[in-house]
Length: 173
Length: 270
Image 1 (spheres, chains in turn green, cyan):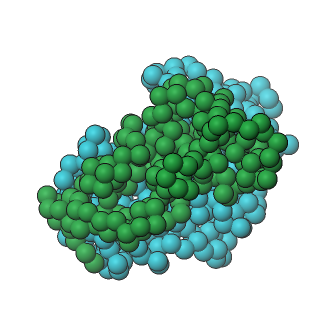
Image 2 (cartoon, rainbow over the protein chains, first blue to last red; image 1 turned 135 degrees about the vertical axis):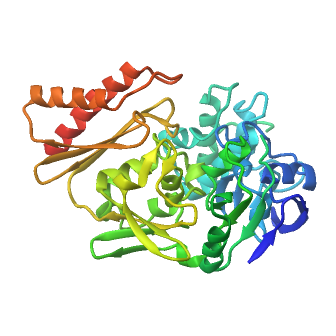
Image 3 (tube, one colour; image 1 turned 45 degrees about the vertical axis):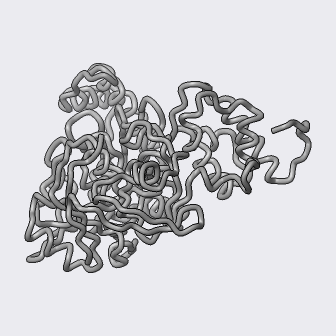
């Protein structure tokens, strides 16, 4: 058993996007704040802080999670994946990210990091989704700009592209 | 929106959890998936002195089917139960209701027992536990006991769990009876305005309603002619003591109980 006393900082170590990562956290520190303020990984956004809006969605040990509903000390030894881990290389976008750009699936971008994490996870598990399945997944996110339609279109286009469909017009995204 | 300070205990043995609860009682809270408790901590509606994390205890992570019951351990996540291959056949009502519990992104963390411990009056899992007549398995350092669902829930977010007790598991009777579930919410996955579950019984239908009273309410309806059924449902809808709130009026809630209740009863008896 390990007991981490309140008011003191404790070392937390885990893998962030495949690389070792560590820092100090009080027991009450949320994973969102740890990622943003201790690690400096500000791609994960903080919206409602009670699990409703979905902006802070990340993967913990391969499962989707609201980073605002996890404590930093709970991910000790876990593998955490955030939006910073999606692009295949610096200056390049993943298929899903490129589809978002082409389809104007983001406007202000606040909700985007969380939605990308959910869709990235979902498309790996469900390579040929129906539009209804994508919309069902998106009920776990709030977007106040797009009306969701371009997000659904981007997700469907990314799924088709990952399945080998090359029919779409070439663009600069 | 940050939790107040607490000690965090990462338990590695069940004894440590029970000893912690025996020592600290109501000052300690168990954290499992955190999908109900973390919002309460963030909003400082709960300010425990100690948080005991039970998610690293493998013995709590089991789903067991034995002598007509399915027992779900305290560490079993909602997504894990939803993916359990026997679910549809053994627990058809849970299979119908569980996709309405939160979202994919919260079911992946939230536990079955955690939702029952939280006892939100509009939550699906307490409702289903009541509709099926399930049991809550409680354990303290001194004793173990089982409490039926109808005796476990005590009011809005209140249960008859003692401060030194851990919800070790919940069990649902594996039920092959016909059943039905329906929910009305603002957005799929949001808290239910009204949720109803119906299970066929020997003499008729057991109807359970969530989201209206301050805990799930269950009523047996014998086979009735349609006008008599309408009257019985209307009386039930009024007895639930619906209140107006920002999401829906009391009258709308009663309407939903009457409409959904009649639909489900017909569906189950058809």
